[in-house]
Image 1 (tube, helix red, strand yellow):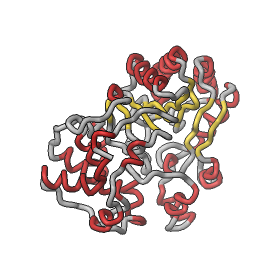
Image 2 (tube, rainbow, N blue to C red):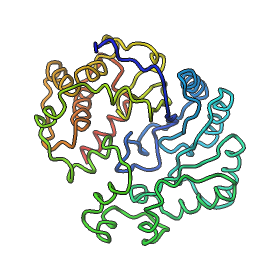
Image 3 (cartoon, rainbow, N blue to C red):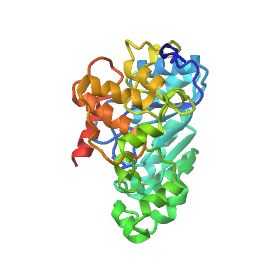
Image 4 (spheres, one colour):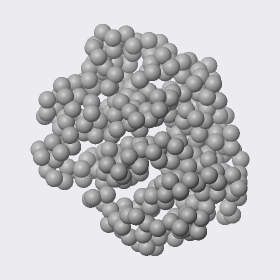
Length: 338
């Protein structure tokens, strides 16, 4: 397999990221979403271009996520209208329920969204979300959705008993959960909740899972990252017209380049990762910027990859536009400095 053979030719199942700014900064967020992001939301033209590309590449249904998509309900309505016009159905819209104020206004809004093609809400239910969002709001959204005739996809209902053991009218920290359910509560969560160890989850779980040296990571991963980068079983396109390869947040491909072989001139990092993997990226960053690891307790190769890419961004890497969106790396800086 040569370096020139990396291409995304068919999309299976995925979603549209309408915004990265969010009402919460969950400690497991793959995209480092938070209230600190610029308050940008996808426009109708970009939504149309993304959805037309998605349809042309074989995918006829997507979900909508963020950030929190319902922070701009009028624009979400526009996106639903565009999806209908393009011929892409919406499987569900993700929400953390932070926008809930009262039952009547929630029913009114959800009824409008239902009329525009929203049939299911994925409602986030977890201790991570509960750190900043009272569970009573989640309960309010579930009740309002039922009255509006919208289905609920609870993600995940297994945590309801944990959340309702506290006062549901206010948020609760993970420390409170650990005090009640045990010091290993974070590790218990991983047995009950699918979490991809990338983004903010790297810092959250490193105290428990970070046990590998750089050399161990390299020894365990001698090959390229072709499988991860070419996986389209859970893809995302975002408000900037970017395609995020696999679950590799902070790496992007222009949607215009989907369906074509990616050039090493335009995508040197992605092509290097695809063909040589983490070893190639370490060599690249060392030669270009004198990269030296700052972490001695890595979780996995994605952990090392994220550190290297952040180092390159902070070293003013400008050879390509692959290391985006910029806010992803800005938020990492804030997390590491905290």
